[in-house]
Image: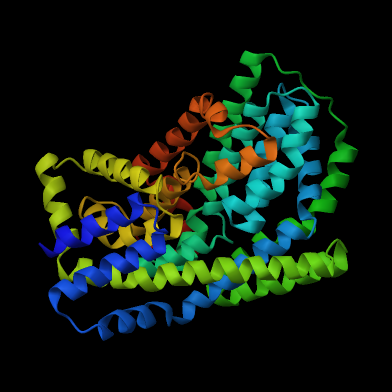
Length: 430
């Protein structure tokens, strides 16, 4: 009965439009009151969930991404991408994919990625004769790669939701190859649609111009190398790397590029504070939810139910993907990670999947949920920039979504995509 109250109240609150964080908290409160447990349990679990040193990385990574977004780094990355691949058929679409991948590396946020790249690339593509739905779909789907980059705060959330079963350093290394796979799949989709619609190719500006644009964009791109090198060499921890990222970004935007203004700095700080507040609230209330799921052995029950469907690992992995995708379409990325990791990670590990590989599977699924409604955060942002309805964009989404699902299948069923770099760079034994 307790599980029915927990599940029914949670989904009931979501259906009537209660924000996810409050829906999680209120459903936990309803269950605790039904159980007759002391109300103090709620606050104890919330505080224990948020009072973790490693969570300091979250506000730092969020702030670094906002500084990159408001500090003019995007323009230099766009120019580099355009010079590299703009001469291919549908060149601006290809440039968009590469630019979103590169900026995702420095921002670590799909929403920041689509905001920065969309503001530059979508109007540019429309001006050059590309259809608006194509411009928006390329931007919103390519931006999802930010969830797998070293600056992604969602990796920190997953590592802690996994209960110490995986190192943050291993996750950071593991995300690089899946991110490359996502980019390649998106390039194929963007090119195929461009050929079908007869979009033109641009002109190659010459290698001299490519090298000049690379030199201009390099200081911004170095943040990925600094974080990776620092963590893998043991110079600083993942938490310290986030603080280093903020310091470097401030120096970059104020003193090297000189594109940061005081109003934009304050705007970036305010947005980082707001995002951090939302994430920490989700962490706190999700800790209550996880406590109750552990109390009622939800992971064991879910595992038993899946084992009745099939004992084949590939079918279990497929079921996990489907469930995570469906949940991700109407839940925030952080909430999905915090709630679903304690349930599905033990099941995946029992079926033979490494926790680092499962982390990549989780992050890609949650990123996929950022596009389709009802949540559709990145899609709504992209459509607002392009001045087009979500419905019009959704009608032509299939080639781009299929490309991302293909990348998800590669990561799910080929462990080397996630585990090769952690083993090579860190001696990971998983």
